[in-house]
Length: 335
Image 1 (cartoon, rainbow, N blue to C red):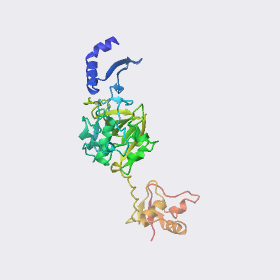
Image 2: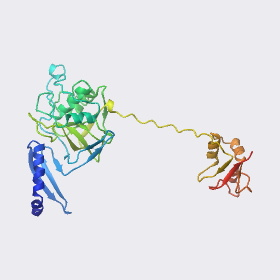
Image 3: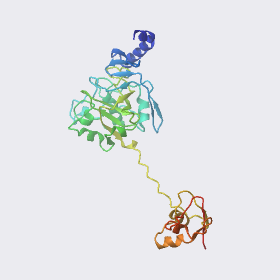
Image 4: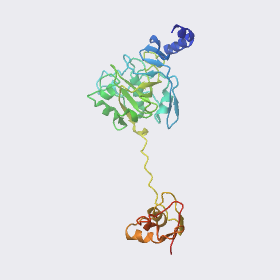
C-alpha cells in the first residue's frame, strides 16, 4: 500500500485538490483501500459521499450528455439544503419569490443556461437544491415549488400527508414513480435524511443510478452557502417520485396498420417458396382468403407443373400420397 501511495501520490493529490475546490473545502478525509484482487478504491469522505473514479456518458434523443469524471453519489442531504418556507401559503413572501429567468423549452436548454451558476430565489442559505427546482417551476409553471411548510426538499413530494406532490404537479406535470421509466427533464425527489434532495434528470435509468443536474450537490461553493449547478451520478435508492413536465412527454408511437397485400398481377404460374400455403397464395393472388367450398374449388384450379400426375396441391394434403405444396415446385392456374 505504501508503494502504491508513493507511486500515485501526485495524481491522488490532484484528485483531492479538485474535490476540495468542487466542495468548497468541505473535505473530511480520504480512504484508500486495496482488496484481495489488488483493486484499489479511493473514497473521498465528504458531506457528499463522493467515490472516484466514475465516468459515464448519457445518450439522449436531443444529444449526448458527457459526464466523464462526474462524482458518483449515494445520497445528498446537506444541512439547510431546502427552502426557507416557514410561512403560510397566503403570506406575501410565499409568492413567486425572487424571479430568475431560465429557458425551459428542453431540459438541456435549462441545464446549459444554468450550469455553474449559483441560484438563490428565497435569499436563504445560498444556492440550495430547492432554489434550482424553484427556478424551473417559476419559468415553466409560473408558480413556486412548494414544500408545503416543511422547509425540506423531500416535502415537495411527501409534505401535507403525501398530498404536496399533487400541489406541485397541478396541471403542468405528470407524476412518475417507477425509476426505470425516468427520462431527461424529470424532476426527482429523494427522501433520505432530514432534508432529502431535488434535481433534474439529464438521462434515463442507468443500472440503479441517474445523471442529475442540481445545486448543493458538490458543485463550486457559492456566496452565502450551497453549491453551484453541476451534474452527479446519484443512486436511486432514496428516489420517491418525479415530476415530468407535460411538454416533455413523448407521445406513444402508434402502430402502423399492416397494409392489405395487393393482388399479384400475374398468378398464372407461381414458383412455390419455403413456407407457402394455399391460403397465402390465395391472399396474394386474390387479395383475400375464403375457406370452405370456395377454397376447395380454388385449390382444384391449380396443377403442379412438376408433379402433374397428382390432381391438385390442396388434395395432396389429405391424400395417402402426402403430396402438397413443395418449395421449388411450380404450380399453374388452370383456365
